[in-house]
Length: 247
Image (cartoon, rainbow, N blue to C red; front, top):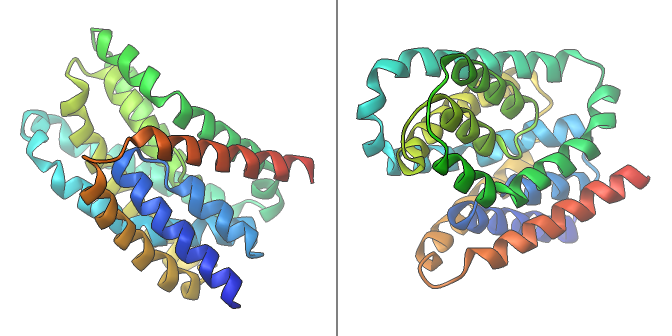
């Protein structure tokens, strides 16, 4: 790995950690950065899945106080997220790499759009009432499968499913979302670490950078406006997806 690639990964990892702490969407920085240093798309997505995994633990631990009220549902939702993640991992690793390569630009642009409209989605879901068990269970399974296949925007998919399926405040649902994200992320991480083409040198660079960025982001959360990082992520994701679509 040459110095330019090393610097790009460090910057992307640190920026992703900050973005995840303030607004989410860090994978929309790290995944294109891995592509930019010449990594094949499948290798990039599995390497990214392993690199960002430690952040899921911190998020779930920080929000664990929101879980007791959902205790009766936890076993079923965790199981569905795990089964979905296994399904997504199998789809990623078993299908020809050309399939994922062809989908990557659309996945990046879709995740970027989802990230861009996340505040609006959250407000609309918070204002809606009612609950739907089928939407809940289907959405959690889809969130796990999507997150294992392509990490970007997984938390938003989970939060949307939870808000449509449970009659609870978004703030409380965020803790449950963190647990399901950790479940799907851990399942995918173990699977790709064993069977996937993980580039461990890149992981050794990205993971500590993400961790340091997360610490810095947590300290800056009260001082900086998350909108600045949101705009950066949207611009980066749009540029990366558009460039891949045109090549």
